[in-house]
Image (tube, rainbow, N blue to C red):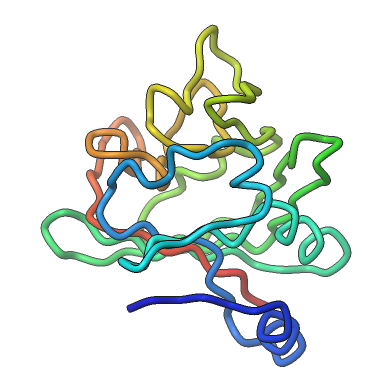
Length: 178
């Protein structure tokens, strides 16, 4: 399945409270190993890998209340979900700092670990470790001391970790919801 949105489609989805796909990682490839500028504006490919763009995420979430949903497929084919009742992305001047809270779901709460973190890419390191979590995991994200919710990672870095249990992923989707 291939998702791509024009600005008019996004406005329509948001205005009519239709879930808006903001991320899709099909197979944990190296596709999300992108620069700050690429994550800022968004990108996609013909296989369905997709990132909406941090600037648009900021514009959509900063003034209006949104929920965030993760759909997570483990390598064994099982699907799980995690929803967060609050999701806000700040401006580029604040390095797209993200606030998240209000977990519910059956996947376990891995993403709250990333609350109040700034976005990190291989060319702009804003995480809490010396070195770059984006380099280690193979993709940009809101890394803390690296990641429990590594949905933009590659291969062994493509995982959802809860209570020390690592769940390796086959595919992921992130949805912005009313």
